[in-house]
Image (cartoon, rainbow, N blue to C red):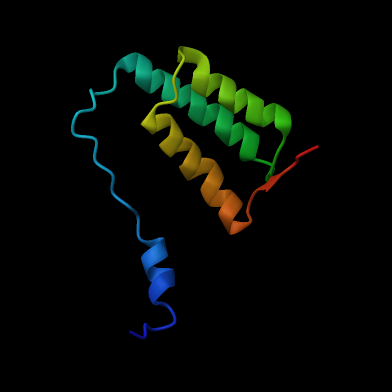
Length: 94
């Protein structure tokens, strides 16, 4: 089957909805933790370059409670990976 040139580009751009029907509602502490993570990530990506130290800071916040939750991973994906894939963010591997 032949697809139009933009077909896969359109499909790739569609957001994937993931449901977690058994997930407990987020507590106020969870929401505060996510807000802390958001601030750390936004600070790290603000200059368009993420350093080893900034990556470690993000990981430290994510693992502060001993687990990486789906909400934390979603937040990092939204704020970091999307910018990396678009070229708006570079990684300093040194």
